[in-house]
Structures are given as structure tokens and as C-alpha cells.
Image (cartoon, rainbow, N blue to C red; front, side, top):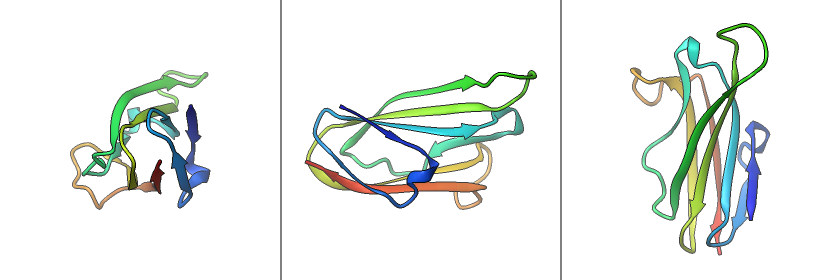
Amino acid sequence: MKIDISAQDQGRRIEAHTGDVLCVQLAENPTTGFRWFVQAPLPVSLEQAQDVFTPGHGAPGAGGTRELQFLAKSPVEFRLTLSLRREWEEPGREMESLTISGAIL
């Protein structure tokens, strides 16, 4: 099963089953240097399966949507944090973040 997650799900508790896919979709404009990154460490119960940017419609350099997919591998409690930051900057200097927690059953 696919579980859709967006910025509105900040702090939401997710219940997933082994084999489910957590599909996180967030607004991003990589031409500004800011991109969404998994804040280390990635929980061992989740495997990053996809990281794709889809440009929006409009002028060149306009923003779009970053889609990150995570496969739920094993039953466990988890916490996943993503941060919107420049790649060359240290974690902790993010412009925005998204944290979800939950359980894989």
C-alpha cells in the first residue's frame, strides 16, 4: 500500500505494514540551492527507494515537487526527519524540516 505524506503531515504518527511505501511529496526549488535531504541517520526499518524532482509548470528555474519514497522493511517504531537545506551547509541550518514518526507493523 502507498501512504502519501506532505508538509501538512508535520508531527503526524504513521502506521504502516511491512512492504508499504511511504511517499513524501514536498515543494522544492533546487535552483535556489535548497533541496530536501534525509536527516541522518535513516531508520534501519526504512529503505529509500526513490528520490525524484518534478518541475512545475512555468518559467525556467521555477519550483516543483520533490518525491522521496521509503520502503517499510521490518516491524519497528521509527522517526523520519527531512530537512530543506543547501547541500554544502551543515545539518541544523535548515530552512524548514518535516518530522514524522510511527510504527511498521
